[in-house]
Amino acid sequence: MISLSSLIFNGMDTVKIDVQIQLSAGLAKPEVNIIGLADRAVKESAERIRNTLSALNLSLPPRRLTVNLSPADVEKSGSHFDLPILCGILCALGILPEEQLSKYVILGEIGLDGTISKINGVLPASVWAAQNNLGIICPGVQGVEARWAGHMNILAANHVLDLINHFKGTQVLPVPPMTSPDKGVVQNKIGDMSEVHGQAAAKRALEIAAAGGHAMLMVGPPGSGKTMLASRLPGIMCDMTAAEILESSIIYSIAGKLDSTNLVSTRPFRNVHHTASAPALAGGGSDARPGEISLAHNGVLFLDELPEFNRVTLEILRQPMESGNILISRAKRNATYPARFQLIAAMNPCPCGHLGNAALSCSRAPRCAEAYQNKISGPLLDRIDLHVDVDAVNPWDMKREDSTPRETSAQIRERVVAARNRQLARQSKINAQLDGKDFDKYVAMDDELMKFLNFAAEKMGLSARGYNRTKRLARTIADLRGADMVGMPDITEALSYRPINRGKFAV
Image 1 (cartoon, rainbow, N blue to C red):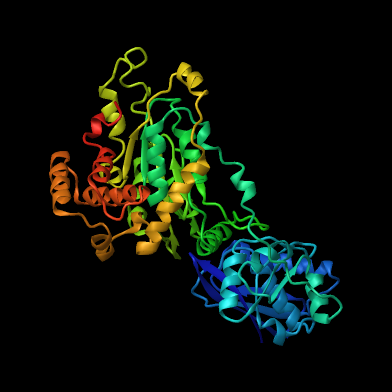
Image 2 (image 1 turned 60 degrees about the vertical axis):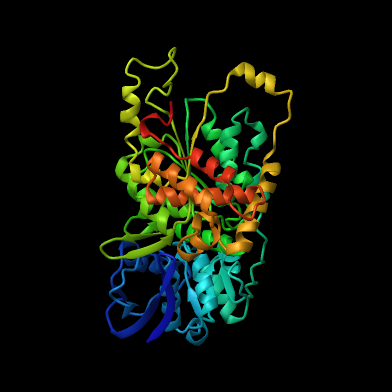
């Protein structure tokens, strides 16, 4: 009996699958049976392998060949089992050495002509193989992706013949090169903050959001620049750490969205359309793939036209915004993905978008505004730290402003990086993630300031969550001005970003 290893991905975790091949008594013609809980793609691998062997001028012996995928109670899905099954059959036929192949994790889809095609999940598989002192055999086009896990024992083959020749000693598969993430290509696609006319208050709020990792909601009429502002947020954010790059790249690899020649080296910016379904946002499907909130991990999740989203879909955001991860439960699989994203949302104040403008607003104003804004639940709004009004900019003001220089993203980013470094040096995490003992320790205030905050919280009707989020926001504002203690200006500015009356926060 031949036994090789492959993997399936259960969220960010991996499950080892033993691929066991056994030749039994002689039959009139060859027969391949794949047993174990598996989807259609796995069952169909028998036909793909049969055609591949024919293309290699090889034939199966007239015997029953049983392929067992163990553990049997774990559902196996995907085409990446093609290559380990084929390697096991080649071992059973004496073409490949089982002793050497048993030291590798094997993944790859097989074409009818023997080519080894790209699959999902090579990066996490390579990380798992390195942690367990195993090599990895993967498609040739994903050799660089496997190399990012940091180990050298990688065989990246473009064709089954390349793999056979390597173990026969007639060809040597080179170790894929280790490349550095290319940030320049993505950075060039991000607009500069100097291109935004006016909107000083919104720019200030974005700077605070970037410094502390806070959620933000912009409310304003159409054409006021809300989407333009949000799209420039990645340009003022701090660089990703090596751990964040690897973690985000693993999520993209599992989702099949990772560029095989580059890691996710710039903070993700996921701009989700309001027609997105709940599984698209949270993740799911039969194989429990990550959704948009996990693809936005370590980056930004931008939801434009917030009230136009299905309310049930929006409520999915509440739990991961607090915990930083999401559990996807399906009948046959549970998967947990990280989802520590920064929510940036935008909306019009009412369906027509011109609430407060007597010349443009509809006849139903202001009643329609209250119904429109009430599409967003109070608990979700309470989790958003910064609520900002974005007023329309007059075209003639834009022309007048062209004569004065505007701050660039690089200038704002310097302050954001300095504030972020203060947070990490003080508490090893950003302010938006402070909780428990750390929150009480690092967001300390004197008695006079606490008395003022308590009075303001009572007058504004702040919840306990809103109260603590105001304190976190004030801590970030203090970090931006380089202060060790939170002061009165920080508290008053933080309070200005909390909505007092939901029905009037966008007038």
